[in-house]
Amino acid sequence: MPLLVMKFGGTSVADLGRIKNAALKVKREVERGYDVIVIVSAMSGKTNELVGWVEQTSPLFDAREYDAVVSSGENVTAGLMALTLQEMDIPARSWQGWQVPIQTTSAHSAARFVDIPRENIDAKFAEGFKVAVVAGFQGVSPEGRITTLGRGGSDTTAVAFAAAFGAERCDIYTDVDGVYTTDPRITSKARKLEKIAFEEMLELASLGAKVLQTRSVELAMRYKVRLRVLSSFEDTDENSGTLVCDEDEIMESKAVSGVAYSRDEAKMTLVKVQDRPGIAAAIFGPLAEAGVNVDMIVQNISELADGGAYTDMTFSCPTNQVMRAQKAMEDARASGAVNYSDLVVDTDVAKISVVGIGMRSHAGVAATMFKALAAENINIKVITTSEIKISVLVDRKYMELAVQALHDAFQLEKA
Ligand code: ASP
Ligand code: MG
Image (cartoon, rainbow, N blue to C red):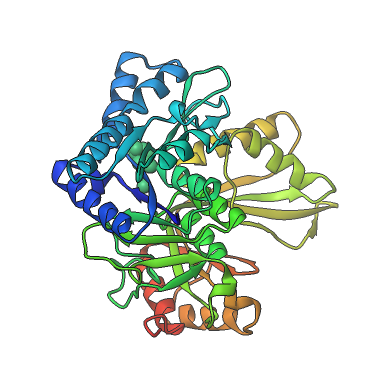
């Protein structure tokens, strides 16, 4: 039997009516001849509520009990989905993570998959079950305790099952109808993409396009799982939504596929740092230890002053990590590991990125980007590039304008 994985997010199972609507979509695939593994999230808002209950009960909670509590939201929807399918005369049953068993590491609240043995579910399909409804987001540790995968983890459960069972495709049903060239709230010209390459999706996901958990895209890329993002609130068919796939499946590739932004970016500059071997390690080592996620890094050319060589070191990190970064740098200065004259913090910036695998073969992308920003009189504060991405930091007040200008400049409204 060909097999499909269908994942329904929290808003798609928010109440009994929506669960029924989702079940109808499963029924249609069963009627087409598929065996289906359905992965469900908790009803929307449920996981937040459970997390709140844990924190109120025990501020320094035991992570094992946190997982025991927050994993329960998915157990409810898995059971309800199985019942709904049974009411439609479809042979279905629910599976909690430990019953499969979904084996994970013991890193509670941030567990990773170790193995998903197929035997138990395969045996049920062989008995005539058509649907296995699996609770997303959870697993079991080697110690036999319930684990969870980190927020948004059901996407990753879905991809892992698609890989383990060799599914034809992994359909992620959600409250948007696909992946867009940029956020449609910023420009009405944003266009839904028919296809997007894993690598592009990975860049967009980590840049804050919150459609898919980043880890699920990493996993899909590694195991070449064809992933489709589509709406559970619309009538959908095999052409709906956006297919996230290997770049070989994408015929035309424009230089740029999408424009992403991140509002929560801060820029920090260490002024007049001694320029000597080991200085970057002396700065970024303590930042890493402090758990600061440094993104962009720029080191100025060295200048000679006061009989030594000095440089400025600029980096960006999420706004909510600025205090931690400041403390790490002040401690490093106090211990003598790093010298600098000043630490300048700018929390009023945004990061804008253009992403596209086509950049590898198209020249002039950076020039087009910078010209478009110049035409709007937007000053660029920091630039970084990778093989398929160019990012700039600009004043936050220009964020929307910059996204719109770049969307126009790369003609993303056109297919
Ligand atoms: N229910 C979990 C969360 O809200 C997992 C998920 O929905 O993907 O994070
Ligand atoms: Mg989600």
